Amino acid sequence: MITVGSFDFPESVLLARLYAGALSARGYPVRVRPDLGSRELVEPALMTGLVQLVPEYSGSALEFVSLGRAHATADVAATAAALANWMAARGIVTARPATAQDANAIVVTGATASRYRLHTISDLARAAPGLVFGGPPECPERPDCLPGLRRTYGLRFRAFAALDAGGPLTRQALEVGDIGAALLFTTDPAIKARHLVELADNRRLQPAENVIPVLRRATANRYGPGLLAVLDAVSVRLSTDALTALNAQVEQDGRNPRAVARSWLREQGLLAAGRHERR
Figure 1 (cartoon, helix red, strand yellow):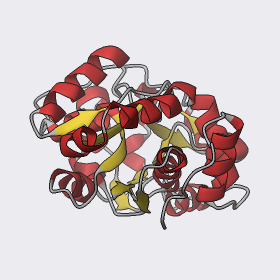
Figure 2: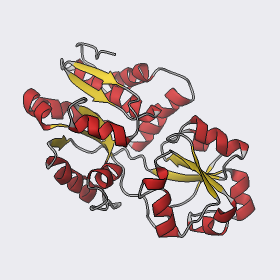
Figure 3: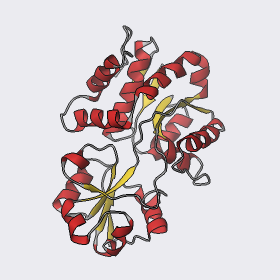
């Protein structure tokens, strides 16, 4: 059985359903374990074999697995190659990265952007001392979150509010004014729908964050090259625009991630008759 794990936010659950659905359609025995938690919980589960496959994000995964010794860049190919090397040393295989990327986004409301004349993250430096920044609980330790904002942009916020991973708690806190700036994700459809303002990452703090399936080498060896071929067939079709649109179906329209994944796989010709993944 191939257990596909996800992080604890809707897009990750959706991605797990996409890759699991494609594998199941080709007869691989698959089950999905959604909402397992942050990377600090999911990566050890992968390393120890509690899950066999995780849809990851290349830059963040590289920083995490290397313990910060390898720094991801905006170069997609170089970041994916570095991640493959670090993962290989731990018995993990990386599949082909999708063209879809989902990076951290520093977001403010339209009113805040207008008040402080904010266009870039650099502009935020003059306003940060009076603002509360909201993001996931692990943000103070992540190099591309608070530490990176301090190091690269010199940002010193009045306080930090631990909320969720780019989810409804963070969006609500931003909209009602409990926080002045937030970490969301670039594929979050709510940014456009709610007229929020994503500040330009003008000093390129955020690395390439292509969606990339990572799986245990033992699993890849057991099922052969056909397994990676199925994962790659999903990735080659998955663009950033497509992922954003799929997120909108889940987060705005309230559709079930499993149903959204199956519809997209069918449209892409990847849902041939076969077994269904287990819950």
